[in-house]
Amino acid sequence: MRRLYLFATCTFWLLVAAFWAGSLWLPPAETIAAIAVDKLISPTELAKHTAPENCWVTIRGNVYDLSTYLPEHPSRPDILLPWCGKEATEAYNTKTKGRPHSPYADQLLVKYRIGILASEKP
Ligand code: HEM
Image (cartoon, rainbow, N blue to C red; front, side):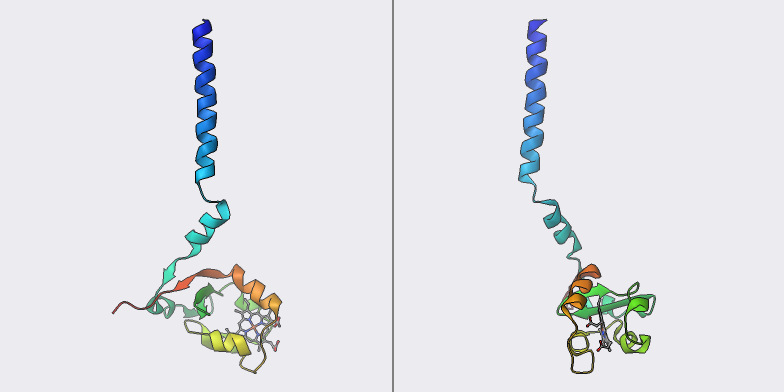
């Protein structure tokens, strides 16, 4: 009986140690999320998303899905819509008026990031 007790106790603590060590070997959860979000999106794929309810843009090498943000953007819809499916770094940097967006806008952008722009395969 004493042997069984010892065996059970040792097995329990071995399992606890293995589980704990396993969680140490894994990268932190936010790193896993960042890797998962770094989906490569080709220019051809990007170009398919031109509708207001399906609007992707690329800014500074990242791809953003602005579909849900479009109705909330402070300007008239026709300012943003022409950029759906396109490279919009310059437009974003200048608001097409020679004025940069605020740091708050930069923060908002992070929320809509869905991947990075891949170079087209030859
Ligand atoms: C890609 C093309 C874009 C263009 C041409 C554009 C243009 C504009 C314009 C004309 C205004 C209003 C007038 C002004 O504040 O000067 C504005 C304001 C604003 N936009 Fe955009 N925008 C674009 C993308 C975005 C994106 C992707 C976000 C965020 C996800 C964003 C966030 C904001 C915010 C928060 C404001 C309020 C003013 C500020 O914080 O700078 N915009 N934008």
